[in-house]
Image (cartoon, rainbow, N blue to C red; front, side, top):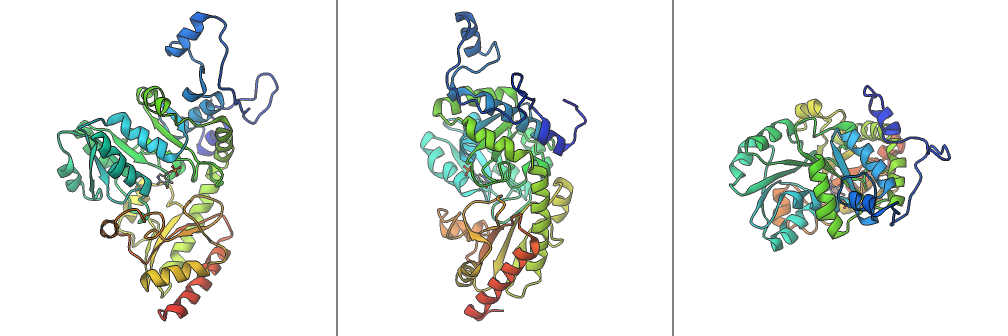
Length: 400
Ligand SMILES: *Cc1c(COP(=O)(O)O)cnc(C)c1O
């Protein structure tokens, strides 16, 4: 593989070669769980990790392995493991560094499932946490305790699109000898490579932009070979969170067009954000590509594009928010993101419903907050849909 290849070329070619027997270019799907060995010695060497190869479906699969190599290359990591969901990746990555009596410091507005894992399941195993505003490095420094074993962040955050300085956070983590784990789902490696900025581990929900077609639930952890090996053998292997060959195949297919797709998501989102910023019924727009976003300068330095997610605050709170969503005709009400279709949701009653109301407000999740995953439709059609729905919501609620 040519080391000078650029992103789109890597996304198409890395880790993939025509099949030796048939010449087939697209990746063969190998559904096999069991693998035959020529002799007892090679079986023993494979399970001991002294010889490359697959030995049982829960610990790896050849189709999935090709995908893992490709994702490792795209993120610039030593190795990668594909898992059954983004939450499998996040929980495995955290469990790789945390055990009973340990503490993890977490950025304030994280993905709802991550919040649940950290506040509900992890404490049952003696793992404790604090949530801090990671835009304030002093707060992060002050939050680190002697038993803090990891710093976990998401940038841009969900749903407020807060951008965190990964280079400075990784320096701070290194000063304290703890790993920085970054959820890169909203960006994809096309827009941001946290490992290049000093992070130790990257996690992904591949359910979103990496697969990009709304038909697979999957996740990845990218990091050092020893971390990935530990997750494969001791965490995901024992918990049974493997990614199967069929879904790995779909992600391999989706990845080939990721650059094209993400560029279009970014272009469309920038247009939608600018449109919303000028609308009288819109109180505030949260999009790192807008010059008045609080971390716009940092975003421009750290990210190669501003992403496809736009959140905004509608005047009139819950009533106006729900009226607006109900009037949309093209955009669909949905919990997911990163799909070809424009998806809309109301965080306070949908994705972040499980977070207590007073906690939600601390994370900036008000009743009038709307999150849009801007799709790949023609941007003029997306904006026309928003326009008619805002107009209808405005007359229903008497605002704007
Ligand atoms: C969706 C999502 C997750 C969880 O991923 P699943 O594949 O649904 O388990 C984690 N982090 C972020 C930022 C997400 O958007």
